[in-house]
Amino acid sequence: MSSDTKIGSVESIFLILTVMINHIILNLPKNILETTGSASLLNIIFITLVALGIVYLLCKLFKRFPGLDIIDVSHFLGGKPLKYIIGILFILYFLITSSIFLRSFCESIKLIFFQRTPVFFLLVLFVIGIVYVNKLGNNSFIRANTLIMPIVLISIILIFIFNLQNFTLERMFPVFGKGIPTTFFSGISNLFAFAGIAFLYFLPPSLTQPNQYRTVAFTSVILSGIWLLFSVATLLYIFPSVVTTDESLPLYFASRYIEFGRFFQRLDAIFLLIWIISITSYLSIMMSFSIHIFRKITEFKYVYIIIYGFAIALLVLSLLPQNMSQIYFLEYPVYKYYSLFIVFIVGFTILILANLKHRKLKKGDAIIE
Image (cartoon, rainbow, N blue to C red; front, side, top):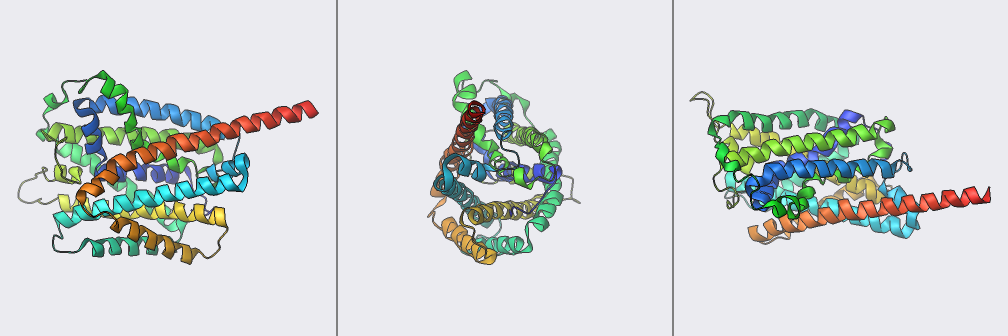
């Protein structure tokens, strides 16, 4: 996202929601259920409260650096070397996450609809779409994302509502699932579900109303928690052994349980079409942030060269996994802990140290005066 792109509060909220919602579409609910079992709903409420606490701290830490993003703050803290390091870490984070997500989704739709089609062709089609969207410019796809996301949010709610008759509420017992330690201690690692917080590190310079940063941050986390709750509840109450299933796109399979007689059939295809558009938007946004960071740390002016270069890198990275077991390993353990490291450790460490330096410099100025 270029530094001259200005977006409103609503667009910013949907931008952050894009990460959570598209990972919900893929395998996020199933991954949470694997960790905390029948206590997943309780765990989601808990990690949402923790995420809100983290966002509160994030807003406090950015207060001393109005209009700056994490790259600017890194430059203030450690000069150009630290600026380059943090920039590269976030570029790798966005590219690796996008490649894992793209490959996993393409493998899923290949298994569902295109069994005889090489996954390479599906990947290329998505990459071409991402290139085209980024060439249109940030304002175009940010506005498009603002139109798409409400439809995607509604689709997840509809799957929940239309499946109410298929729910078995007894599956929420035992309430604490695998035990209190798992639910509240090891289960805190499910904070990776709120990896959309990464976008909050880059939003301040782009907001048309900088004073709305706090509202954007809290609203996006609350909405993310609510939709995660709906999606996990859908899977928990429908599938008797969701934690052991190997199926990707579990929400898609939940949509196939919906029945409206003979007139309305195969509604799952409509849901999948909406999600394909949403996922293209998500990948385009991830690419845009990578391009923005690269331009900021290198001052490279030729945008189209960067777009094509990053598109090739995305395609190559998405082709590296050899089988589904490797894809799943990258999608869950690797993505999970890399997100926790980059979003919640690296970002906060930079902001805390920068605040300490700012306070020290301010005290030094006071002594001189």
